[in-house]
Image 1 (cartoon, rainbow, N blue to C red):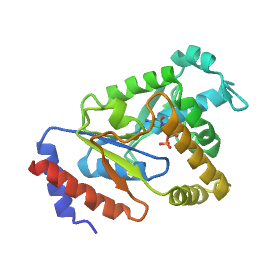
Image 2 (tube, helix red, strand yellow; image 1 turned 45 degrees about the vertical axis):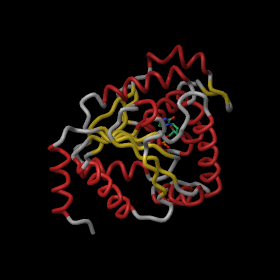
Image 3 (cartoon, rainbow, N blue to C red; image 1 turned 30 degrees about the horizontal axis):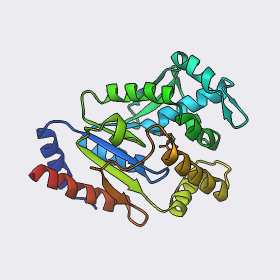
Image 4 (cartoon, rainbow, N blue to C red; image 1 turned 180 degrees about the horizontal axis):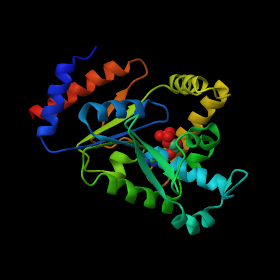
Amino acid sequence: MLNNFYILNLFKRVNEKKKIIIAIDGYSSTGKSTFAKEIAKMLGYTYIDSGAMYRAATLYCLENNLIAGDKIKTDELINDLDNIDISFQYNSGSHLFETLLNGKNVEEKIRTVYVSNYVSPVSKIKELREKMVAIQRNMGKDKGIVMDGRDIGTVVFPQADLKIFMTASAHIRAQRRYDELIEKGMDVSFKEIENNILERDRIDSGREISPLKKADDAIALDNSNISIEEQMKWLMNIIEEKLTK
Ligand code: DC
């Protein structure tokens, strides 16, 4: 167990300095959000899941007939961008921000396999990305934020004070995602999940605009075989190093 006194002390020391921006990027299902939430909780920062915004935009496309078969109706989506309002609402019970699409809480809906299957192609659209990046930068203007995604350290906050790039083997990632969905009572197959992860890796890393890649100054973390506790210890060592510099 992490020592509570130690965490409080570290928290105090980080907050005595100026608030910082922490950017966490990486492949799908590497546990970015679990890690980011823990860090935000420890530092008393806001956690923002930027993937949720692309998921909400994808849900909008699905609900508004902007996807036909496998094809995104890109021009129509671009014309419709002003009608897509994505925001976050603080849930005082979970202490987390939940995603709103045009004022409606879509937190559950955006996590379905149905949305996951279309989110990478939708995320390739330049005009949509520009809109999302503007919202994300605005959320980070007062710092004190942990944001996870694919382009946070490279595009959204290239000046972030701490950047982490997460990886894990595809099989382990698929297993984690599968367990999570089964626990939520969803009817999914392991193969379907694994294929979706591999396909999203391919599209997210290969796209022309803001591809998923490690920022030069990001610290890599492969968490295939380590627990969240070990990750937190690893992070605290890094924060200690930064504080003593
Ligand atoms: O983090 P996630 O798996 O919920 O993200 C869903 C998709 O959104 C992911 O496959 C790619 C896209 N995404 C993105 O392009 N840029 C981000 N900053 C975050 C997510």
